[in-house]
Length: 74
Image (cartoon, rainbow, N blue to C red):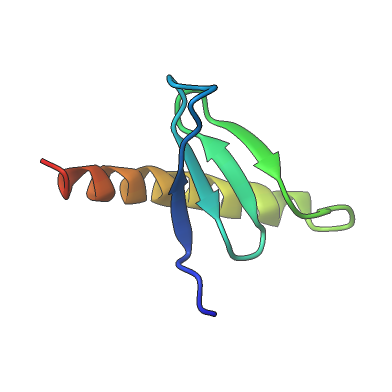
């Protein structure tokens, strides 16, 4: 199965939160409400500078993905 790079997720227990899942390495879930990230990968041993740069880019892309998806509902 081919997964999209980003997925939207919600949960009735957290009605104010907006979750975006990143399905490629490094896999994570970001809550766009407060930019809190939950990692699904063990990044021990990875270059911290590379991960920080990639994460900043992926956070921007997650926000852009969410905005584009929401425009489809307007």
